[in-house]
Length: 314
Image 1 (cartoon, rainbow, N blue to C red):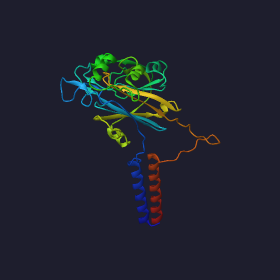
Image 2 (cartoon, one colour):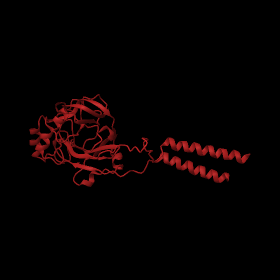
Image 3 (cartoon, helix red, strand yellow):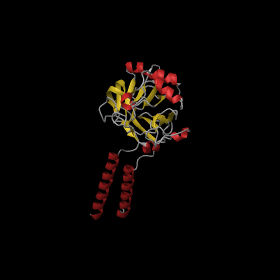
């Protein structure tokens, strides 16, 4: 073999292999499902003021909607609101900050939130590691066997649904879970202000996602029309943390102060079991090589080229 030609092939092979390592796969297509919320039911201090309160677009604690996408491997949830994952500073809060509560995923939507918790059908997802959850500070993840608590008193929040409803309905319109009336949603949620876990058993980790990552996955709250908040945030976790069959569910999350709640219903398709052909040996999966495989190929190419160089010299 011509050494120059061999060198060119090796360089091309190394470049292609390096590109395969450095360049991620093209973003796969994600199908997002949206649950939009009233843009006039999040109460709180208005942006640009020090003592004016209200609801809607200028309220610090307005949430505008949530969304989810799922495949056989991963479940992802996202939220759109006026407050980010680290919340918003507020002097009247016990810790000087009001943020996101934990998200609750009820895997038996025939039951109320209270009953589903009792029966162990609710998972809690702590994605804001600095919130007032009873889970250890900084810890995030998916939790089973949960109990919940009300932290509105520590976050200058509403003491009951009645007071919240009266205030909002004079200025906007209450919507807590997409597709439910106010009465249905508050009946489902039960005890007011249960925004965070007081305890739970961790069953898995999550990956927190920012606006850039979620936009790269095709998330677009603007496609739903209506108003949008400045903050987009979310998280993903392994589908294997959930039962394998088809799942219908209700999910919701509220601010620690319970000044707004956003929720939706949805479903996850059943995850097929791994295929095992006759003989009992799992079918070998094919796909994009792992970085280790690619690096092994580079070493092999280099060895072959060196051998040819030595043969040529001999």
